[in-house]
Image 1 (spheres, rainbow, N blue to C red):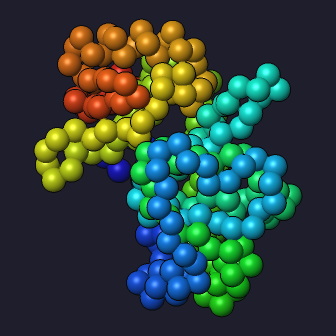
Image 2: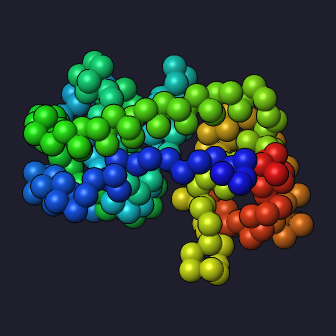
Image 3: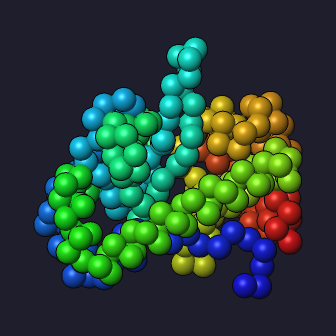
Length: 226
């Protein structure tokens, strides 16, 4: 790789071939959710997995004080709800749609049978889970080796992706500044200060719950990506 940026994640759905996708689609049911809709709740039995076709979800846990903590984001091509079922049988976090979401809902037993009957799909699933663990480890290392502003720059680069069709800047899913701060393990004040500085320099633009990257090259430098 020529740059030091994060390598593309191996997501479950794109790793399947057309036949495998068709088979899994027949085993599930399509579902459309609006922003803020809850797909599953922390603590309830884990009976289904969700494959994200388009849109994003927030992985949320509730603190002892009753505050929502944003643990992670999952986007198109990813799968959610699978790890909790394997480990405890109960949801370990709440999953909410971040904007309009198109997903495929598959019963856990049907999903397990699908993987048993399709070794290549099972390999794709293991690869996607290994990549998720690698990415989580990289985030933990980054929290030790970088400051809040650098982590914010890297997060925005990962969420927005490159501009589409050679033009137009990518936009992150709708997030509050407090949610962004939770994702990078920093304070809201750090996020607010950095965005204000970058906005004045034409690197990003912001509006309610929306951050748009205008200058990816500058943001890579700010994130220490070269």
